[in-house]
Length: 130
Image (cartoon, rainbow, N blue to C red; front, side, top):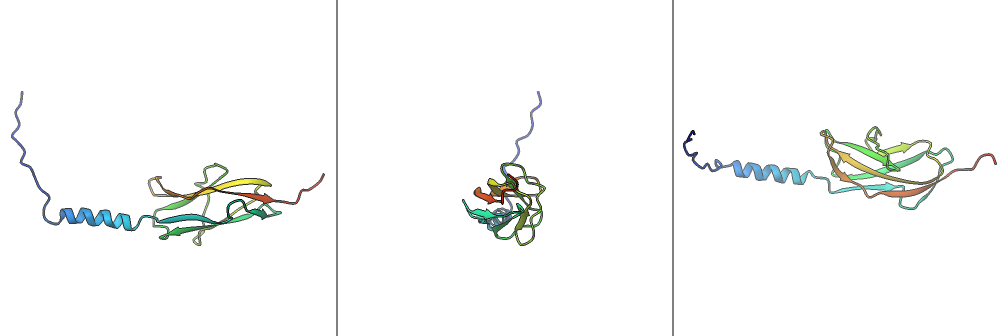
């Protein structure tokens, strides 16, 4: 068997602990504190004869570089949904009836960082034919 010499214990050099604490504090200060769907509101009846509904989001602080927002509609993955800079997106040709939406902020590695509460709303369209 091989005997290795004891490795002396090391302590962080002066300033390294402070750097780690500063990095952790910086990450916490840039964490998202608020993310919500502000329109449509829960249980709202949305008159949209064309089925187009605009969704407005609120995110604080603003979206960081490298992060994206995905919108889930009725449980479907919406990673391909493009959200405008003003945090709005128009959903096109939604069918009449109840829909549920939620949004999620995703980092560059695909990790979900913060999720809105789901919002359910009803789309009202003129019935055609009959």
